[in-house]
Image (cartoon, rainbow over all chains, first blue to last red; front, side, top):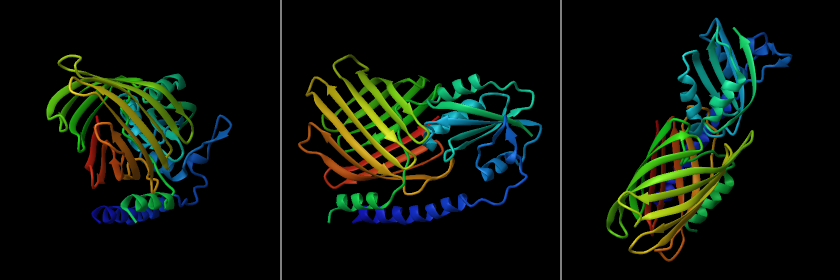
Length: 136
Length: 202
């Protein structure tokens, strides 16, 4: 009976968390925002709210948007954040599990290398497949 | 209707998920785990020089044989497949008694997961001077909601395990929670009692 109670409590808790998750997906009108820019002839492939929140306190910065395969678990993606935070040129990092993206804010003078980023992502066991960089 | 059936129905009714306790960390990372079930208690620390392998030491309180010993452990990633929505892993695991080869084990561990669904298995062959035995399990799970990075993540799972020292499979529901670098897994079965797993990744 105790186990049944625990499972049902978890179920109710999960439903409430699911409601919060749905709230995350409500997008406001973000026309004209930085994420609307074209990068190398392609639209920036990011979650608009997440991206805007990421850059809200940044300036004179390069933003690297990295597409990553295999990034399906928060606990397993922790190493990405830890690995990149060791880089002195990294000012901020965020992981978008839903979109399979890693957002990295670099100092504006950093020479960003996809090969270097790919190796750092691989050090955590995932595969980086694409990189878009824009300056703000 | 038994607890197991209720757990199965809940899993089938809910269609979400994510997870797991990786035996290898990121390159340069280390992990501390504590595990307890009806057969043993253990504390295991491992370091991963590379995402492909880890080395560590495990201290065990063996309840069945009423013994205490340690393993030097080595785990190697045999195969990994990353896709946009999933990851699949197959690991080789081994452990050698810190005081000699009288105790050692080899085994494999595999898992496949998306953000919504998890399936995994493990098998170990344990050899010691008293009695050799096998230890295996299968585990499936569903995440009832998809948390964002940094949120509390929850999994509802079903685990079935068999130790050849015991006669039959034991199947029971498991709840898993993790947030940040901390993970806890709790399972309970009337026959085998609590099955708990705590992990912190540095």
